[in-house]
Length: 629
Image (tube, rainbow, N blue to C red; front, top):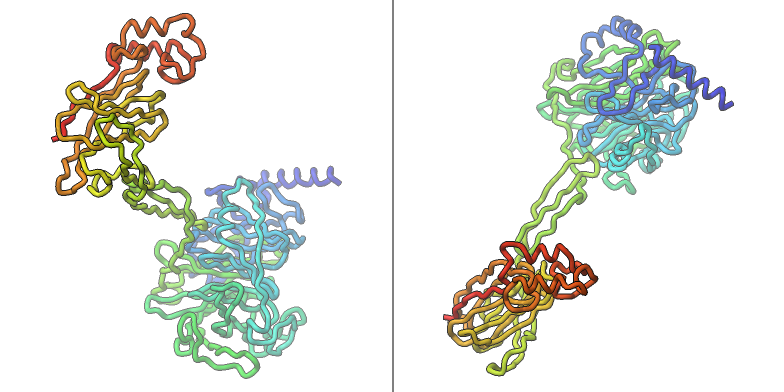
């Protein structure tokens, strides 16, 4: 059996490559355009149906994917299609800028949705998991793709479709959810009956317009055993509010002609509403494109009840009767229709099932492509090319957090169409609420009382603006040393005429904050020193407790301190180099040793290189003059 299947697949491939009328085996990508399969039978259809010949817009036409006249049954060909698919529904989504086409399989493979670009270029096949239904109609809003079949409305999130389209596989399986069509939703009896009673039989087509999802049934106006029979020649068409999918609400009901296979609303520039219906029945019978102008006095608001005629046989909402203003004879086996915009004009797209394997041989005329009709010129109106506004569903995709002194930014990406939206995140400023008790050890000349200062709770910056942040009564000098590149401790010394007034040792990995309090007015200098120092920077501020007596602040900027003063004589020279070259130290593990200048745990040639740098040699400490005026 496997051998037969393998041979069959080889035959399919050979047929495709030899130009037989099977779908081309092209790789799925953004530029793939399916070839027209039956050009001669299409030409015959154009010459037969002169109404279509007069209104067709060739530029917007494109090939219907997934059809073929081969004998491959349900065998999947290399591009992800089955040869026995029958096209049914079509819709254009203004949010994703995509065309979606549904097709069901005669051999009961999973129903698929073909995804195409706005110009009809094939992109991907979406295979609906565990669903082989008819999917006669397809519609979409800003959130979901809808399909109807039987007494069910199925919906698939456009965000999940967007995720599926990111996968490398040509055919991607997606899941659906269901809304039951019942008597409560339709306000009339629901069931599968082929009679003229007031019974809704099956969802056959659908569309979306101005906040309402519309669905209707296919019926005949002549007695048939396979389809509902409507003696009135009309079927019901229901407009439902699906903003809350768990609680659908019926808003409008109107009638459409029997044999309707698809419907689509649109407006003109004056705001009038129109409805187009595609009608067909029989493999060799002409299809009909019928245009209606909505009775505005019965329509009411776009999403609300109108003042139409209330049906006496059970429908509790008003039923709208509309005026047929135009009728076109179109090629046989027309299915669903939808509106789309091209070159700032509104067009009606139509899909046909005559090119499917099931119908190709017995259909006299074959439409292997989606047809396009210019609505404005056909009806002699100015059709509105404004499609519904897009509502993006943004999720955060990137963020740069702000800090106290710098603004941040966040990028949001629409989960449905990938649109980007960037927003600035304002800098919050400092939050000087963290109270710190000074731990300075002062020389005996000064009282050793607990003192406090405030830092930012987010970044530990000291509050230098408020004179009330300290509890001292005399001048205080404080600041912070950048310890981020410091592998060893450093000492901050306050001097007056070379006399040490106060000192503070700042350990590596500390926050580098120092405070000298109770400093009298006078001339001072400050020194940074230590063993094996790397580059440091220093800032300081002076003020008094009384804000009225505040001393102007000033920055203390040091030159880079030098590394390599191993013997702590304030000079980097040959004596330090000699110490490093001692046999018992050099090349040995020496974590924490003064000779390990770069702090990598080993005294080696890299440390010697630091000592010998021109800007370091012979200098190890930096003294900054500072005046307490």
